[in-house]
Image 1 (cartoon, one colour):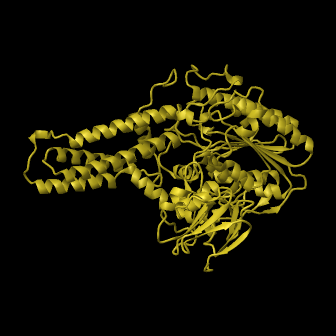
Image 2 (image 1 turned 30 degrees about the vertical axis):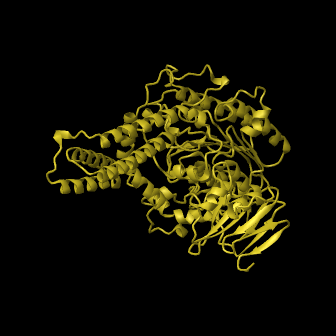
Image 3 (image 1 turned 90 degrees about the vertical axis):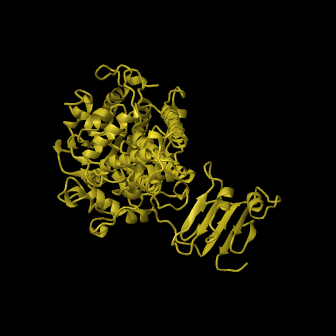
Amino acid sequence: MTPVGHKAVTVPSILKTKIVRLLNANFLSLNWMPMLLYSSIFFFLASIILLKTSKNSTGLRIFVFLAGLLAIGLTALEIVSYRLTGIGFNQAVVYHLEYGLDGAGFKEFVGLIVKGSIALVTSVGIWAWLIWTKKTLFGGSNKYNFVRSVSVILLTLLTIATHPTLHSIIHVLNPEETDSPIVDFYQTPSITQSPLNPPNIVWIYGESLERTYMNEDVFPGLMPNLKKLEQESLSFTDIAQVGSVGFTIGGIVASQCGVPLITSGGHGNSMGSMPTFLPGAVCIGDLLRRNAYQLAFFGGADPNFAGKGKFLKTHGFQEVYGKEQLIPQLKDRSYVSDWGLYDDSLFELAAARHKELVQSKKPYGLFVLTLDTHHPYGHIPKACEAIKWGDGKNPMYNAVACSDKLIADFVKEASERDPNTLFVIASDHLAMWNYAYDQLAPLERRNLLMFYQPGKVKPSTNSRQGTTYESGVTALDLMGFQTNGIGIGRSLVRKDSTMRETLKDPEKTLAGWSSEFRKLWRVPNNPTDLLIDPRRKLVSFSGFQFPMPIIIDIAPQEKSPKLLFGDVHLSLSDAFLNLSQETRSIWLDSCDKVRSVAKHENNGDPNKYCLWDDKVREIFQIDQTMDYALSKTY
């Protein structure tokens, strides 16, 4: 159901907004996509007309029907991706598909799922009717039938070959290499000089709260409180979104580590189950922890979603609070949205923890991620029920206005409580598709980045060409910590050139560096032996520890194994049966499962771990810590 006061958003309106974005994009943002889109539509219509004016064989109809299903699937993927990302199929989609969607607020997307399913089934039904109905246009003809059939095949292939989504997938999964070597730009983060009395830091990530909402010509009076706070802050007005940062965990990683978030490279479903998150990266959390900071994170959603909690714990945060930890602290535990805590509750709990951190007299960092401006229409907490923007009919604008007040109030109160604190107010990323998108999409959109510390940070606006990667290193610089840079990020208060100021096409260059960024996951090399600890349910090899159950699939031509972990989405029993015969697979699981699948025996102990090695085709029960050498013949 469309919320009151909103026009229904249809597929044509989505495509219209999409095309506007494409026409205004640079090359890597795929400004050649409209031509592909029109070409694909032309080839599609031409193939149908030619097919329906001829008398064709069943085989040709089957071919066209299957190709059409592929085209429908690609189109559906693009529309869903666009509704979720505001861009279309990109690295964010790949990341969430590989990492998983546990913890997401699916209830908000029930309408989209239902409408999408109906549209998909309807499209397939119409397509089937169109292909298999015997009625032909103009009576049909057998003249030049062979030429017509070949033409239909070629036009159908061209329909798929020119489909924009196919090109997006190819571009995302196989980016072009770049001539600019990453070693000339990437800086391994380290602090070269520390202040004698370093300030504390409070960092507020406003969910999708981009700077564009401060455009008074388009959104007059929408964010008055942060506009006022900006007059007392160092504000950067040209923070662009470049690379794989257009989603929350991507924006957090970029701001704290100075690198884009690239998936680990298809090593099974390993990303969600690996014990650490980007262990090869050095982030501001790591650097602050080394300087004895107590680091705490507060977010209203599930910290397990997209790996936020694992990332933070890997990189220096001692405390990570999400909805599971915070809901029990609420006076009314039912006062939550589909995603988690409302922001008024979140800030109340964060303020309580802030008081404790201040009283500890130890250096600290408090990071808060808001939630209520999440797409598609935001959430309105009780504290903001009276806050309306314009006619008040658009809940997305009301949510933005609410967030503006809650953030500004929190910053002012916390600043008075502890003046020796640098406050960072930043958007985690640009807004994805939401009920304000028709107004946002045509604008020059930029992220929010403000630094506030009265008496220490001189208020001004700065229009340097920056990106999210500059956020963390700039914050450290303002705190008095000197570095040469963090990853590809450079301090915006120094003369060092930023990526946008240096590189001709930073988007394309970052894509070309994907293989280098992927190394930050430190996927282990193929093992020579395994150390198996059944008591702790861990297996260790190549310097890494992994939880059991697990399948380690080793391909001789690959440097790293594929790791498969059992979870609600993947049965290792099914995965085992579908493994290639050309690889060596080692399965560690409960003995009942291993014996049942590998040997068709029903005498396995469900409380014991067993190992199956398909090279030696034997099952080993593991009663105590075991060192299993893969080179040994058992």
